[in-house]
Amino acid sequence: MSANVPFALIGGGTMAEALIKGLTSRGVYQPAEILVSDPQASRLVFLASTYGVQTTLDNRQCLAARTILLAVKPTQLPAVLHEVGAHWPADTLGISIVAGARLQDFREHFAVEPPLVRTMPNTGCTVGMGITAIAGNDRCSEEHLARAHQIFESVGEAVDLPEHYFDAVTGLSGSGPAYVTLIIEALIEAGVQQGLPRRVSRDLVCQTVAGAALLVKQSGKHPAELKDQVVTPAGTTAAGLQVLEEAAVRATFCLAVKAATLRSRELGEEAHR
Image 1 (spheres, rainbow, N blue to C red):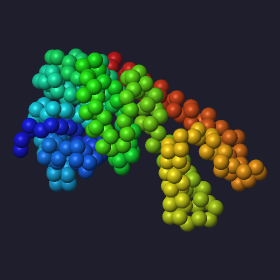
Image 2 (image 1 turned 135 degrees about the vertical axis):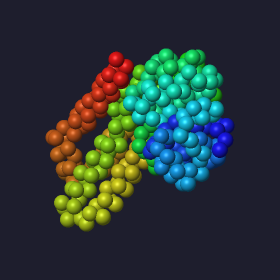
Image 3 (image 1 turned 180 degrees about the horizontal axis):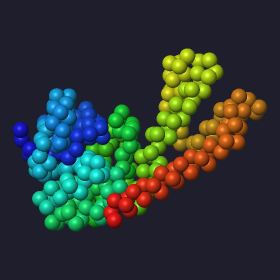
Image 4 (image 1 turned 30 degrees about the vertical axis):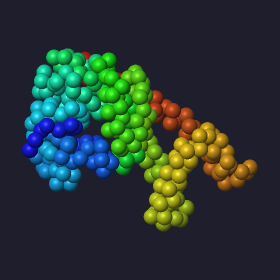
């Protein structure tokens, strides 16, 4: 095995696998150009046999790559940085998907701070429909940021944001798939309650949600305008929307995002005490 590859991942979990799949299927990297390290040998065997990537149990072998993505759990990050930080090449781009890990928190682990990019992807990346926020440190050039965009655009879209927005990003798009799947679950049950077969209700709901999201995105219109196009006076949609407004669904979602944002901020502070 040759560790001299352009792209390496420290951590081979679900998000790492999504990126491997996206990068290789889009031809950004060939499988042999990707090296993955993970403490679980069985996981490495799976990734090698499924995607043809190179693997290693030694995180330090990843340091030969031009770009290194840190895809470990927050509790594992200090130990990983202690292991590799002092040997990290000063010109090697590091990309972190570690929740709550701020750019400033990496500095003490490196002899010379390298270009670093903090990201917040969401679970839509696993089906190529994710959205990822990207923020770079002062060492990052336009080329470094472009490289990060290329990586995450293989599994969806990416947007540059100042790092101070990341708690809100976590509360909205990071936690957002859970909110949407809760809505989907509730609508499926509602359809079943009205007599629809569960499979039919599921198909109707999934396509309705996907179509509505695409309509909002592609039309460029305000969601309220698109909503009003469906509403007729004293009609069925008006009756349903009245119930939702009386139940303060809109305000409840605002409170949910606020709570998740505050909790993200608290977890970040707790991790760095």
